[in-house]
Image 1 (tube, rainbow, N blue to C red):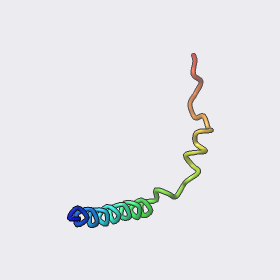
Image 2 (image 1 turned 60 degrees about the vertical axis):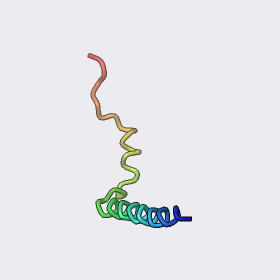
Image 3 (image 1 turned 120 degrees about the vertical axis):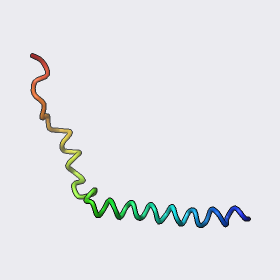
Image 4 (image 1 turned 90 degrees about the vertical axis):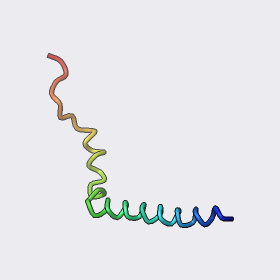
Amino acid sequence: MSVLAYLIPLSIVLGIVGLAAFLWCLKNGQYEDLDGAAERVLFDEDGPAGP
């Protein structure tokens, strides 16, 4: 039973840390361009491979 005295506050702290990390990502624009990386794969910006 004494283990719960450690696990409950630890889970609350980890939840707050996860929420803070998510809000930090939102503030820094991490989720602004969701389709950009998927579309960039389709375009070839390199030159010819051989000489």
